[in-house]
Length: 167
Length: 100
Image (cartoon, rainbow over all chains, first blue to last red; front, side, top):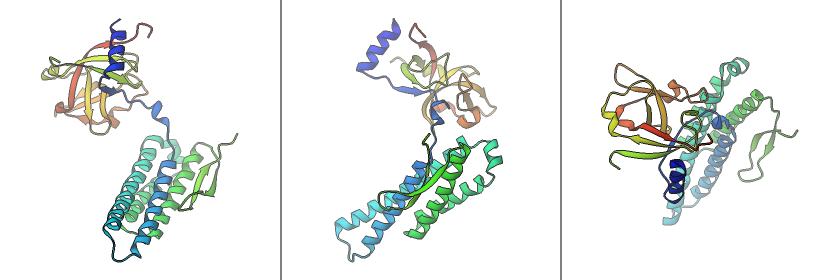
């Protein structure tokens, strides 16, 4: 009866929530978030290159410049976070045994992401994409899911590794 | 109110003692007393936000290490140590539907 009362109160004036963190619902891992974050970084670099050609920058263009740089930075952090979570929480000793290069690859992604954040350089972001795609390949292999490469149908139109989930 | 607060719990790591969607009554002032193994606490965690966990141990430096009630929970070492100032309350009572 007290529970029902609290439930009614909660529906009108929600109580603060405390999470009972659990690995069951958190088993949702997918490198796609990291892949999309790299694509966004590449797109930001492309847009920044367009701004580079405009001199001098108007007030609005300066604001756009700041936004693009800020977003590139955020997406670089996101790449690191997403890859670290999969590496730290999903990858287990059995998978490390099967894919011993995973540690090095993860570390290379951390460095490549930093380089891509530090510079406005498309080549560096493409190198990052290549490494994140390799990571995605390993990830899906650990699940026994075949992968294929295709060009994402939106700017910056770069190649991504996709899982082939068709039965 | 009067040092007591009701929290809604989301997640399964504290089941069956505190199933998901239950409410718990917690008292912050109880943390003036020594925290002991087995106490269930509301913790303001740097990485996971506000969580409810059971005390696994209190180390010699006074740091509190916590865990869930079942094997699905994040492990003690994943949760890491917290200090007493991060305790938002000690769970006194759990309210759950009668059917659970």
